[in-house]
Length: 345
Length: 284
Image 1 (cartoon, each protein chain N blue to C red):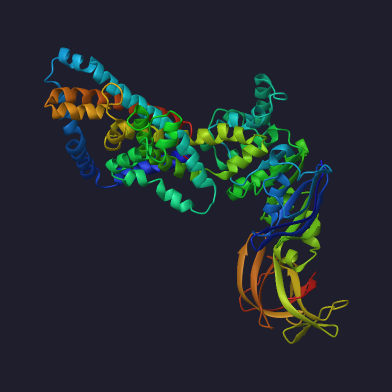
Image 2 (image 1 turned 135 degrees about the vertical axis):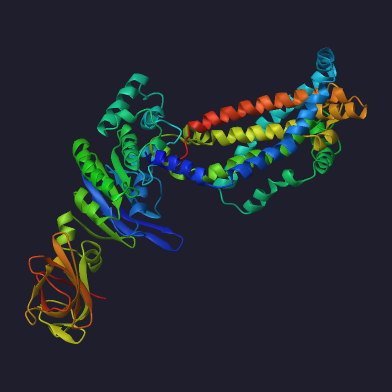
């Protein structure tokens, strides 16, 4: 099943939630919609599900016009951030719901429903909770039940709205891996919404980065991390140092100090320089493009994180290996191993 | 596991919460003075009658008819209020329309209006020449001074009980569960029957019980519109008043005791039913 949206526009009052969005999801893909809150990612998902309607644009599921159908006819599995389980039903009845409300002509008999629910509970590894009520489950268990419920109707596509957003960090990590392997197993075309870049990069085949109702970049997790298409993507994904620079006559200037960096092919004017924190190499003073003084060092994990005051007046944070210890007060030179410059402020 | 921890935490806090003796003592004293002692007096007074006299009073045609009118019409009115009250709640909670707040406030009017005023107003409205009474009379339906009038008055005074108990529960109902039901293929009707109503069931039962209790005990508004024909449109509370005015105090208390016991049994049963419905929706 493919999903395609064309030139989708949606406004809430004066707020533009979606501002001309085009996206094509291929059959069997697991795509992440990643962006800060208010970027329109949930609105996009809800429109695909039929829970919201666009002002203009098209939604095609498997090439058919989905906007002609309501949520009920679209046959889409939807998983909510806050689970939306039916509190008065047992886990079993929650999962069976989609099967029980089918039109009489196609409804399975009781034995077949039981077998199907059992199969789904096995799939999410919670068959032992069948007789409990949702309030007796942990958050992670509830979300797995919500997923089993959505899968019961054998949906054409699966949509997940911040599925792990309400869970604590450890459970999130477990469920991420679990979702990826589950997707591998059932291979249904899926889109999930998240504001957590780690989650998006780790789980998805393809990441769609959104901001202010527009798609900023679509690419593999490697692409969006290694070659961000815009200043927003570079700033949003991974930890970056961001410096306001000026490109003038083939020279890049930070403040009024020229940097020893190549400016080939850059448009003149105010620009932004991005460097990953771990791409700043530390050397003796005078050895790199930047000069600075170490102000503060924190040691944890595999790297040390140093706060460095650049001679231009900016303060940046860098991550360097721990084999070469830094101390507050050291004067150092910094050379970016890789960097990107985007025009504009 | 989380809930277990929470429960034990609350229990532990309760033990350390000071003032249990004082508040429990005040509660018992107050309940005794306000409720239990008057009720005990009622029972004591009825003991002046021999069992045989007691039975004769109760099995008299007039008493039985009065009780039937009171309980039967109160139950019917409560059922109507349950249905109409639910629809009103739905409209007030789910839709935004001009005058919504005004309508919301109007629901409370039967709470505050002196019941005699309500009775007079309803009587004027439904009398044969009244605004509503005239067209109904043309259709051959007589409301004022018949049991139908009692039914109308009981609906009037009971409606806010249903609306006010169900409203907060519906407000708290997450709209996402309806979206979930829809995306799982449920029709609107299936969503209402299988998801929304079961979630509201405890509140609906409470509203039903309160509206019923209020209607059984209602006196002021009913006696104006009822016509008060013995055996036809005479309610039990009115019969009690009549007996009192005839200085037949024991007769009055006998009827009162029966009303009390029947009401208590019904309300207790509804409460158990509500508790059972609630237990299927444990708190989050």
